[in-house]
Length: 172
Image (cartoon, rainbow, N blue to C red; front, side, top):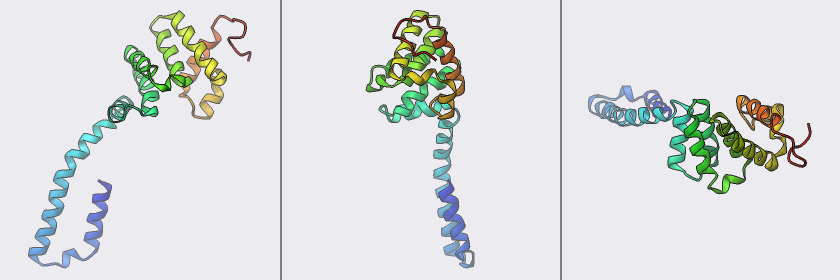
């Protein structure tokens, strides 16, 4: 709609009001038609931006290979309290080439932990740490925008509570 507004402003600035009746009526008819067609599209797209979950679901529907959608949809669902759905999305992502990304495993570990599957959560957390040992550094994850603060803190707490096994966890 910003583009349409700019076109209207340019047209109004260009002396269109000096035109006499037939051309002025045609111009206003065109602008009204354009607005009438674009307002429903704008309102529909506005729904997509109504929440993080809606945005990432729409992105994933339009582009199933989108890494940002694959990584952010489970986190958005998790933050919305929809843990089971987040787990399903993470499991779907773990069936893609993105299974090598530590962020997917971080989310999955937290989802399993919240759902009461402690052994599964520990296994997923260990895998995330193996892929990227500094995922347990809360400050670094937040400072470098690699993780949302609540996710970084919660994962660091989970990682700190893991039973120590030789060679499995880096020492802090």
